Length: 428
Image (cartoon, rainbow, N blue to C red; front, side):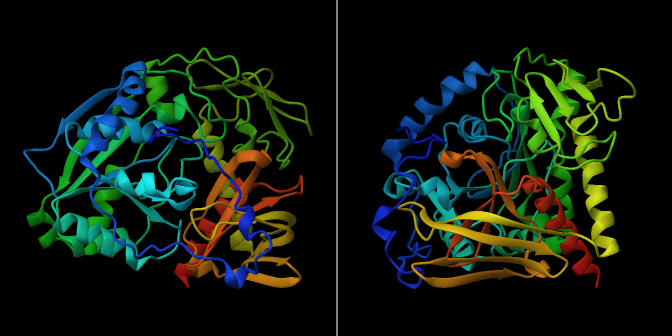
């Protein structure tokens, strides 16, 4: 398997299947990460550039002479991000923050190419220590601060600690903003359409500017720099996608019908979205616009539809009525050797927070996350062998992948609700 591959091999760690959860070995995030091995840098180029050329990636650079060490912040839509990032940095090498599930079955290789492992959406002091150590060695460290693929090709919320971290590290901040990566390979159906893409690499903050700004001002600066809308970019640039199944699986993100307001009754096939409750059908055009086949087109922009769903979730949260419960399948990821199947359990998410319950080898376990502890959460669509949507809930010791079994559940709605519940909590 290549260094840059999103295929997961050796998914399950059968050696732990009969081991109690308390006895699971845990990933050592404190173990020192080294700069990328120089002999692997040409290999990374060889694995990246063919896809970069295939997508006719246009990379513009405005670095104003800045040299390593520096932090580079990228938006995140698909695996092509890593390959275009490698090309953008050419001929330099870098270290990269990667989620722990990217290390499954290949920890030694990932460490050799300079990857820093991380559990998603948990505060991790080891990540800051690793980053600081590598910057002191003159390295470039690459972050994807959205910490997940974008659901609908627009920017996601950034951690409020980002500005504080950048202020503390006191190295220049560079951004790499990708355009078109979601159009090429959306998170809800990860099949490349082979479309041309663009990227803008830009110096955002010098060391001197960082010294004169507050963490909140730094946060605002980088947040503004990472705003994007891939569907608007596609329409404005008339980027044609003639892939016949371009809307297939889009209902996993656009889960609520804007015509009859029914939830969880959307379906998709080929280039069309439809509602099984009222029968209305929409076409996703070759240029990324939605058109109703009959009657009013409520939203021509997929991100506008998505944000309408957010407004509806916000209304439930503000009214105090939001809540979901579902039986789930649960996998644990204690280290990089693979998932451990924990069988069926129960997931509840409501105004009080998130609770995941299950049992393993006759012992019950419970994971509780308060609304205040989750500013966002990671979800996957059609994930690995189960081919179901899932939400992953991390602690410092483990990551639990929960696959809802109820048809009246959407992991997209859970993700939106997490963000809205956090906002409400912060207002208090």
